[in-house]
Image 1 (cartoon, rainbow, N blue to C red):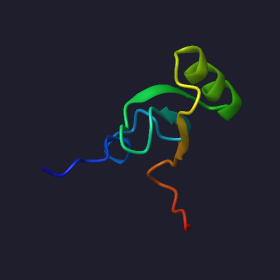
Image 2 (cartoon, helix red, strand yellow):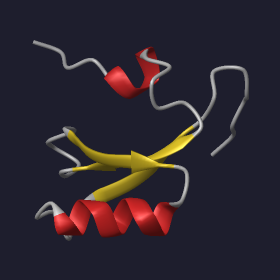
Image 3 (cartoon, rainbow, N blue to C red):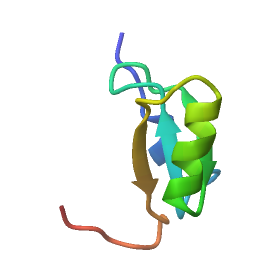
Length: 64
């Protein structure tokens, strides 16, 4: 069974930083526009090692 990346299929987190439990468990534990606050919120919820990612807006192209 293939996991779908909900972050890319939804506009809910577009233009925001998102804290995920881990690379394997992509459960969102915090989100916001300031990465430091997202890290602080995820730590206060018991996830000090959360993975922080930026979700671009659908209308913006990014090259990595």
